[in-house]
Length: 136
Image (cartoon, rainbow, N blue to C red; front, top):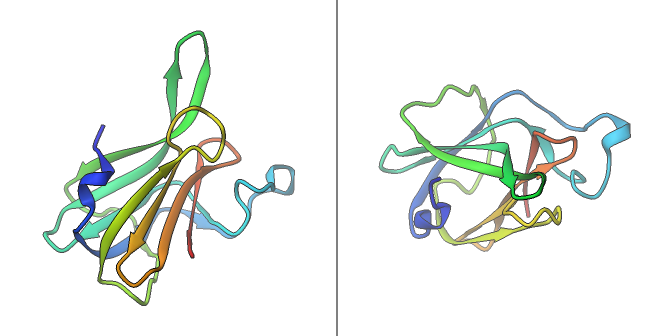
């Protein structure tokens, strides 16, 4: 799996999303998805034309059910058609914070800290195999 922290110092040019919607079904609404635009995949494009795809995934765990995580992989071209408009882009990534906000014992949330102090947060949210994105 690709180490997202290797993108620290790189210039983020654009963020695109696959199918997305503002809210999940009311049966799944909780603090894990509050304030997020719900989507199923995210592409990050950088100044050197490198593109990375982030998707929700299951992570196999020994002696228990799989945990909800995020997968990151390099891709050749953007196939997602919905731009996630961030007025500040292009912007350099100063830090990347990995966290386990679902209590699954795996990384299921990344926070990209931009050099203007804003954060782009993307996270595996409920329902499982969904993710969300927001700006803080």
